[in-house]
Amino acid sequence: MSSFFDALEQRKPEVREAALLRALPGQIAHAQSRAPAFAGILAGVDAPAITTRAALAKLPVIRKHELLELQKKHRSEGGSVFGGFSAIGFGKAMPRVFASPGTIYEPEGAGRDYWRMARAIFAAGFRPGELIHNSFSYHFVPAGSMMETGAHALGCTVFPGGTGQTEQQVQAMAELRPAGYIGTPSFLRIIVEKAAEMGVALPSVTKAMFGGEAFPPSLRDWFTSHGIDGYQCYATADLGLIAYETPAREGLVLDESVIVEIVRPGTGDPVPEGEVGELVVTSLNPDYPLIRFGTGDLSAILPGPCPTGRTNTRIKGWMGRADQTTKIRGMFVHPGQVAEIVKRFPDIVKARLVVTGEMANDSMTLKVETACTAPEGLHTRVGEAIRDVTKLRGDVEVLLPGSLPNDGKVIEDARSYK
Image (cartoon, rainbow, N blue to C red; front, side):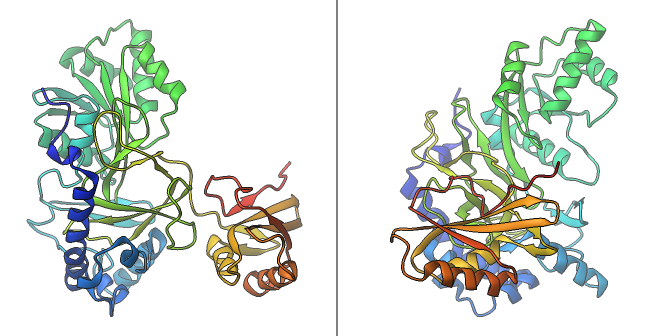
């Protein structure tokens, strides 16, 4: 039996890149013509000219808070609940609609494996003809449906376990004997521990695919000690599958139907390969054509291909949140302001605003990397820019390139809250 879901996973990287970039202009034109929000956001953009990553990087990044604001505005005016981002409407083309905190509403299209989860489920070891115990929620949020439609596309049967009712979950697993579990790792651990407490064996559950929570090596090892091989996936309610873990357990492999960029938090500017930044995703989904959607999550590109033979780009996985907005002396300071300061000085290659102090005695220092040894007047000029942009005073510390940590932080809150 093949170790790959389909032939796309083994394409030469240059062939994949060419295919993605060929599809990009059409998707942008489609978004402009079918999704009213993008008709405004991308007004004046020549879609046929967006054929490179450099051209794509010049388009604005749309972040979740902006999507929410447009949805609320449209709803208050009696318009589309999707804020003009959906290319489809209620009816046969949209069998379900979901809600995420905010409230943000997401459409589910009628296409087979709409959320593209089958690829990740396959990589976690599931195969056609197996029964899967799905414990993701089936109400409000799309997680349950995401996994169920992916499992169906793979040829599996699904038991919709949902959450809660732990003893009933144990009973269902013992009697139905599923091949494995899909859900959060914390809930499966609760089920396994409850089964032990009840004296019920669950020998059939030997594999699992996790999402929605962190899955550290310590927890992975715990499941391995209980006979369960667990793998994680990275997906969102807006975009569906973004990346998935393989048996190599070396990062997450990108899905075949997304274009992923890593940008400096607070900007739309791509960072060098290997540097931590915000994941920005362009989806090739025609029903919900999100162009340069900022996930708000931090990650980084890993060098080289996956040892399993999958040739797509790998990311390190979830590494924290990119929104580092911090309140300093009663004023909010956000990463975009730090980026604005940096853009004023070509000598600065990287910066990090460090906030220290206790209670109301906040102080902030902008640490900047520059290849020059403290260009004349740089401290003074950067200090003036800090006041101009943030309306706050701050110190300036000049460092050599490579001095700042590669963790994606643009604002570090190092204050004491004792």
